[in-house]
Length: 276
Ligand code: UTP
Image (cartoon, rainbow, N blue to C red; front, side, top):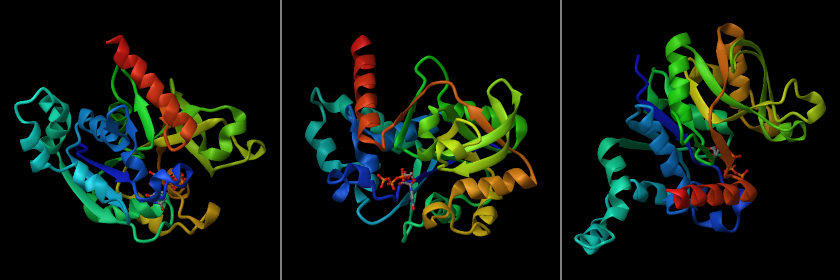
């Protein structure tokens, strides 16, 4: 079954970016002239997905307005030298369907994904955390790479990267057996472990391909670390029953949920543009 839907959990408060995220969604922070979430949608489109299912919350309306036509603006700049500035976003709006539902209480990423069931149904789907910006200028985007693995093994896939050992407390960390170069069969997962509790330094980043049995697994998952429903706990359940893969993706990931990563991404993409 071809994967056509991509879920964007975007309900979080973005407290690390306060005060800017007080009235503005973190997902709308710009990297150059595009908001973070647009990069995620472009990556999903490149991977063949057409339905973008966005989990929002209070104060997130700007996301809906961004993926809609602004008639006044279009009329204003029609025929001027600025018209091309809207062409990329207009192409996304034309190609894709955007659906939305709200996560009423911030009960964790697992809960946010479960809220997406009404938009996804019973089919495999992609998940993008838009604050993780992933680029691979010389090859396929990360979601496209992961879909190829899902097509081969027909199971859920999480993207991983090696992180310095003193950074494991920021991530879900996997333990696994390497099946092919950079592809691990997951045997264990720990949410945000301290370095001495981390089984490896292979950290999960914000890209997933999930099979629909994840929804039942989340329902059976009790609140874990920080009292939140953790997607890693639900994935471990799937890994114990069947197979979950962890994939060391090709490309670069920027943690744009932190100020440092956000500045790094901005500088990197600016330099890439300058080189063109
Ligand atoms: P983060 O913990 O990085 O985002 O969650 P946050 O909570 O918005 O940011 P800080 O830590 O307060 O600065 C990762 C992703 O999961 C989503 C967030 O929107 C973000 O994209 N998320 C997290 C939800 O949608 N709902 C939740 O309950 C938790």
